[in-house]
Length: 401
Image (spheres, one colour):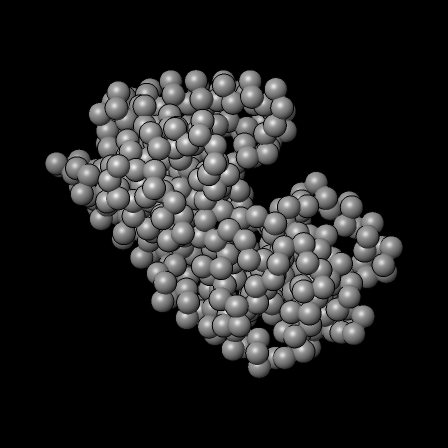
C-alpha cells in the first residue's frame, strides 16, 4: 500500500481519453497506467466526459470513474475530430462542466494529487483547479496537444500557463520534451517518461488459434494493422500496397483490427480488385484479448499520416510481441522504429515505397526474425515496460507531497 501521513494516496486522473466500457481500446493506454497504480495501492478517480449509452458513475476494475455532463454529440467522436460552430459550442460546455465537476470531485473524495493527460484542454482546466484547491498538478503531454498548436500564439499561451502551473509535466518522448522546455520558466519541470506496454500480455509467444479461426495457413505471411479505419491512418495506401504485393506473393494475408467509417470504402476497393479473400476485418477487439492478434502476425504495419509524440501504443505492443515494423516517419514513430534495425520507415502516402518494404520482409524470413528480436530488445532497453513506468510515476508523486 502507498501511504501518505497515515492515509492511502488519492489521485484524480483528468482525461479526454478513457475506455467507455471494460475492454474498449479507446484510451486503453491510460487505463493500463491507472490500473497499474491501483495495484500499487493508490485510490484512483478518473474524471472524463460522458458519452452516449454509458454510465455517469461506475467502478471499473477498482477505478472510480466520474463522467460529467456536457453538450455531447449523439454518436461518440474523439475531441480531436471536432470542427465547426456546433463543436465549438460543445467545447465551451465541456470546459465549464469539467471545471465545476473537477472541483467537486477533489473536494468530495479528498483528492491529494491531480494528474491531467493532455496539456489542453484538460491540463489548462486542471491548472486552474489545482491553484484553487491547492493540490499538486502533473500533466502528461502526448504529442498532438503540443505539435498541433506549435505556431499558434493564442493556444501557446494556454499551453505555457498549464506547463508552468504544474509540479511536473511529463513528455512521452525526448523530442516533445525539448519543445515543452521552450515554453516553461524552469526546465526542471519537464521530465520524460515514455509510453509503456504491459509485457505480461504482450510478449513473443505465438498464437496459432487466431490463425486457425480465420483459416490462415501455417506458411502464410500475415501482415497486421491495428487502428481506426479512417483515411488519416493510411489505410487506403495500405490496401493499394497490399494489392501490388499480393500479385507476386500468393501466401500473404492482411489482418485489419479495428473499426471506423471507411470500412465500406475499403470493401469496395477489395472487391473491385478481387482480393477480398486475402483481407480479414476482425472488427472491434477487446483490449484484454488484442495481444493474441499481434502474436498471430508476422509483420506489423502503421502507415499513418500523423501521430503524437513518442511511439504509438500499437507500435510498442507489436515490438513487445517481437514483430518487425513498417511505419511512416511521422510524429514519435521514429523513436520506436529504427530504419533498418527493427523495421523500415517510409514516407506517408507513398504506396510504392510501402509496397517495396513489405515485399522485402515477406520474402525474407531471416530478416523478419532479426528485426523482431531487435524490436524486443528496444522495448527493454528504452524502458517502455509498464512496470518501470509505474515506478517512475510513483517516485514523482511522492516528491510532490
